[in-house]
Length: 112
Length: 353
Image (cartoon, rainbow over all chains, first blue to last red):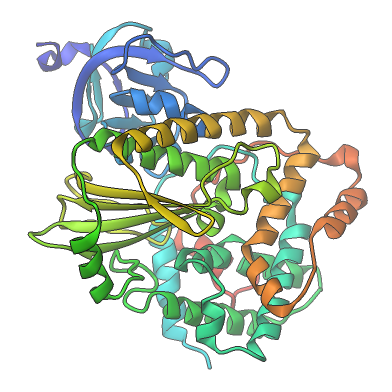
């Protein structure tokens, strides 16, 4: 399993909402939220705001580059009971649209 | 009468809540109208409190605030800081008076929630125990579509932020609890108030005047802090829920289908509102922000029979600074890490540098 391979750590961040999930990456920005045809993607973004609500409601995990445990992404992810890490530096550059990953938010690690 | 112990508890709670890393980033806060308006707003709040105190009891004044959180937010929003800034600009009042009225607001807070008014022990309980028991036994509880309920919470919270900027806890949102239910479960109640939205945002779609979400969690360790972030070591785990909207004082309990449509609509409204605000000229964002601050204590104005509104002062400030000099960059609330900074800001006895 990829998550057991220490060489496949793609990104790290702080745990904002516990849990572990496997899924396909969707990268969104303020200028281009994009709405994947499939639900249950893992949202990757710099940070979220209320405009991301629909996207967050459809996602099954969140990786945000900016923000802390009381940022919008973190608060909403906890309410949605989906895993979330914040402060994942350069995640929108490192991770690619459609990439399959494992988000281990409890330990703050993204595996490829 | 001053209660220094309350001030200490207040600082302790604020320090705990604000020390958490945040990063609020949208939208440009209306209060960026600058120090001048924060001072005007705070001076107006002080004047209102002094006036209303002459004719009403503490209990009656507390009832003019729609939630406990509204009082908390006013304290850490503009009241203390604004009055200190006004002091710096030589507009009075003395630190002693700021201290007295900070304490007075803390005493009003106790009328709203007496058990743990400063959330030091993770509580914001505003319902009496007998009411909690009644709700637990009488509400139309369901557990059939927890994802839709969770979506509705996320969408409503985002809408509150989108329409009330980061004053949402004062104007639009309250979380109270946790209330012990049975078998180690706890209930949180989330209330959202949007009846003021048409006054500030006439272009907005029609929102429910009020939403009430009753949520029973399979957790026994939920804690709320001064800023009402619910936390549980194991993560929140929704068990049962009941949701209602209120329109024209008529409360309606929602089916799962109705709840789903509500969540979709609120998420859509929040998104539209972000786009609308982002497209506003800077000065209009500021004007809206000042209006949101004004609404925080409009109930005091109403009780006093006043018709003061902020528009005139706002336009004066804009003109004084010069329209071309206004710039409202998106401002993240950078967390201050040291206790010293927080005490400097929120201790009414300590002047700002």
